[in-house]
Image (cartoon, rainbow, N blue to C red; front, side, top):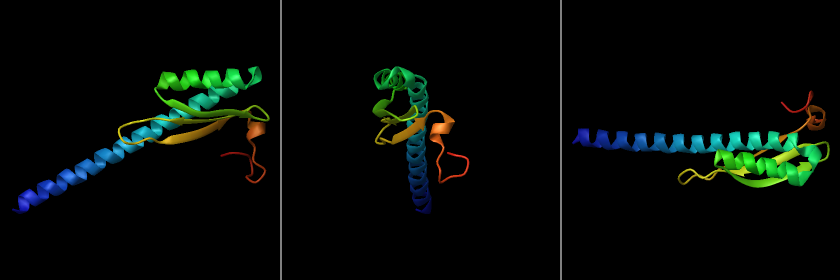
Length: 113
């Protein structure tokens, strides 16, 4: 009897570990695609928001991720958000990229960590 209970408990723990692994994988996939899309958009910032966001969309499409938001701020800062779907997990991650001087935060010494 106790063997059956232990086997069921191990199955539940194994299922929880698999679900956690799937959630972490989805988050990292969305984060990597958002970072790459922000870099691509920042690279094309001088050509305007339409060209920058088109580059970000190409990058996210190549990664198999959906581009949720894309925009440019003053100073050439690109801000994007990407979402991926992996099983029942749909994490959305935002990222920004641009010149270091433009990203410097007056509150934090030395800018963005």
